[in-house]
Image 1 (cartoon, rainbow, N blue to C red):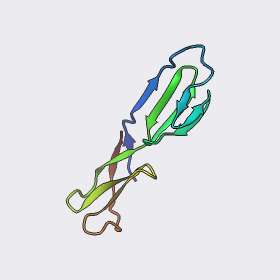
Image 2: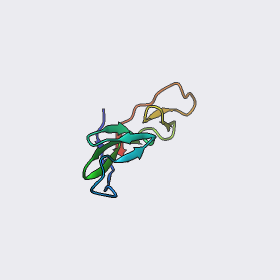
Image 3: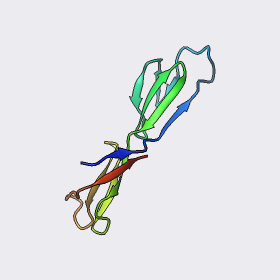
Image 4: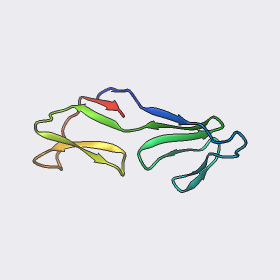
Length: 99
């Protein structure tokens, strides 16, 4: 197991204080108190203060880079670290950072 550090977050203020929701995001009207995972693997939430999103991706940093490679699995919002010679064989990961 490893530690994840440095999660990247952002907040986008609402364009108007008189709005009743956060607008249409990823094809859906987002209401106050809604939360969702965005198409780019961020955990987002809607509030009267705006839309806040934090990355959920942990980028592997400490693994055998000579024999293994990290492949982004967008469907599951994670990196799979596998052997270069056999993508079906996973490699151990000892450290990662949030991005």
